[in-house]
Amino acid sequence: MAQEAVGSRPIFRPIFFPMLDFGNPRRVIAICREHIGDIVNSTGALRAIRTRFPDAHIVAEVGERAASVLNGLDSVDEIWSRPTHQGLLGKGSAIRRMARGNFDLAIILDDSNTHIRAAKLAGIPLRVGIYKSKHRDWYTACVDHRMDEHDLFDPLERLVALFGDKSLPPPELAIEPTESRDIDVFLCVGASDPRKAWPLENFERLATLLPSDLRVGQLLAPGEPSLTSVESVATESVQSSAFLMASAKAVVANDSAAAHIAAASGAKAVVIYGPTDPVRFAPWGSGHVLLRSSEVACDLMTTGCRCADLPCESMRTVTPEQVGQAIRQLVSS
Image (tube, rainbow, N blue to C red; front, side, top):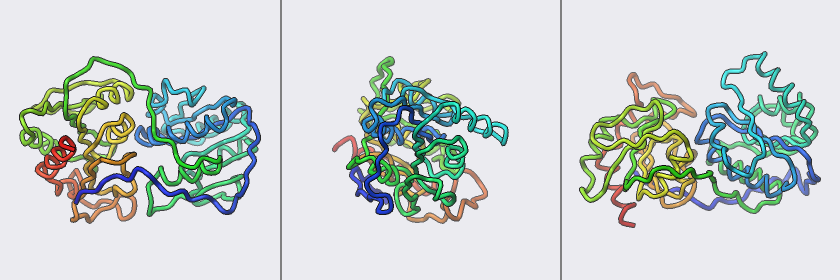
């Protein structure tokens, strides 16, 4: 079935922390997630934080794999890279670094027990964020993370409402100009989890089904396999990927960072889902086509995936013909 992403979202204002007064903090740390797509989707919240605290020195602590997403954005003054695998010693070192930062306010843009624990142990006096399952009393204010809504946009919208924002600003990237390519449709084959990757042979088949007047290319991120049937355009950064996507008529991607980069660049995306739910992981904005088979037995966030082979069988049930039809729908609209 095909769905369209929802661009406007309702505001859920917390009723248990009314009329919060954060004063004028001198130093603020925003503790973010670690995956590229999540950081792209967190940039709107960072913009809201900058707007609310224009004179503060804002540090973003980000997982090392995605720290470069924030390069060039004036919503943060400093970027701290957090190792993916810290261990006890690494976590202790991170807490000490946070304590030395003399922060007045910690804003946790993740449903993480670890992050609120670190902010508390670092002695940061004001702590707000997305509550997961522990230490609710360690927050000065918090909003819930719910499994029946978007994984980030909805809780972040409630979070920025604590600062008086009526809505969550859209994601943003510092676009990095690169050599322009006359590509109408970009294919992005990557996925952070191989269970969420549409088969390469389906991408190859899709390229043969599209009208001959559409120029099709692959946007090739580092480490991804190349398609043989289309031109490959290598890109080294999120910012240069966004520049190329912005001029395309459509971007085809798995439930992956590429879909969220496309949305942040203003491009329209056809996103292929299998063991993840588009309600929870849709890219920002309207006009995208989100494809997921009605024959889904796996859900990575609840029951998991028990398929013997990769990718998840639910990815294979979305056909090249369906994706081709969705592309033609976007291109003609």
